[in-house]
Image: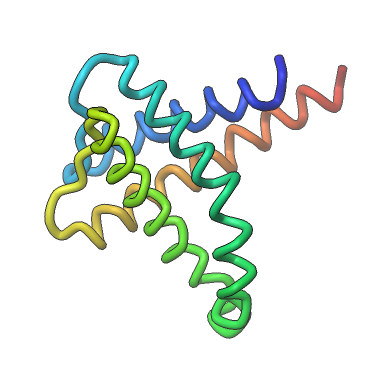
Amino acid sequence: MPTFITRWIVNALAIYLAVYFVPGISLSGEWTSLIWIALIFGLINALLRPIIKFFTFPLILITLGLFSLIINSFLFWLTSLIGKGFGIGLNITSPVFWNALLGGLVVSIVSVILNHFLKDKRKKH
């Protein structure tokens, strides 16, 4: 399976689990909404994450990487805003910062775990 599709599926599953476990996050619409939100999230991560990490490198270094959680929260929140612009509802309710932080944390943990197992399978072939 190509890497892009694999990451898309991992993002979709991670976002689904964030919606499932974090009470302040909901997804309106059908399952196709989840697929589109995962695509938006993947594109935002591919395009903006390197730029943001470059400019916030001193903060990441000073906080020993903990500022990366703030970046993840921001990108997760930005995904919901862009999704709403396209009529896809990833809703983050108040308190937005904490719900986005928890959602970003769930997405990060699930992505790391799934990518770890998928990399092992790719190396064996």
